[in-house]
Length: 452
Image (cartoon, rainbow, N blue to C red):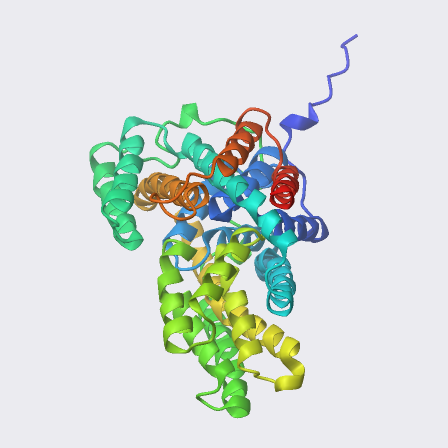
């Protein structure tokens, strides 16, 4: 008699399906734990979606990520939108992208109100003191994680090193780094195609996490295939989603009204955010502080600190700008300062993120059509390698401002350095999660601040 076959190991099978409800719960959770800037957020999504849940394969994940890195706007939020759209059509993308942003918006509205209403609160200052070194360690750890996936050969390491040198030593604009990296990938793939294959060109060296719901060879779903009619319809809806709210603002506030000007200004800012939030912050500072006078320079710096220590994209600092501007400009009158600030924060967030959804929903089908084609993936693989160098520069930027708060001419903050080292050890050695790490560092910072 033949022995019964052993049942297949569940860990080797791809998920049979992913329900919309299950995805909704994950995207909601992600909105509350997405700390550490784009590098940390992308690392969290990779761990959860590629390694643990296996909703999408490594190659498909990197393929989507490379496209998002080309776009203006927050790449981590766009990546969530892309994956949500690929799994559950348009509403899946909208839900994934919106839930990536909404928790941060509500948290920043609350913190902005506390900031304006109560001023300098020692408890908040102490919490920030502990979290900032932890954020530095998180960014460094994320650079390491992404680097181990993208830098698969000496050429990719060279691109990353060149990108780091360009931005660190020569202050090269990020769009220029992206362009050069894309050209290197495009022409380099003609000479050595294996070097520039997605993920660094050494497919056998890539770690396998088992079959995925959306695997390397999973056919593109019907809704993700390119259609001129669907594209035209989508662009018409997108135009209406911008024109109608702007018309309402003009009719209620006038062309020069604060909310109208915020909508127009942050629409332009959204189209200039190549390279992440830090690339566009000088433009936001110039417009919001120097031209429109919605807030002061000191308030802008405080808002950046709030943005660094809340979940969601760092560009969500614009919600703080909107809240403070709406509060101080009394957009709904002196008796509704909070409602005016909250409305302004919502208006700013809407016009900042609307283009991100359009880029993904309109461009996604074109990107899916290029899956596995080296002519498209080679430039993007080179861009991914270059971004590793840029992220490392961001980690050093954080470290400089945390460890030498008054600049190199001032004192070295040994306590912040100790917290940063402890956070790095917790991440690299003990694989501590993001929330426990931030919670522990916040408690440590508060205790140190109160004992001084």
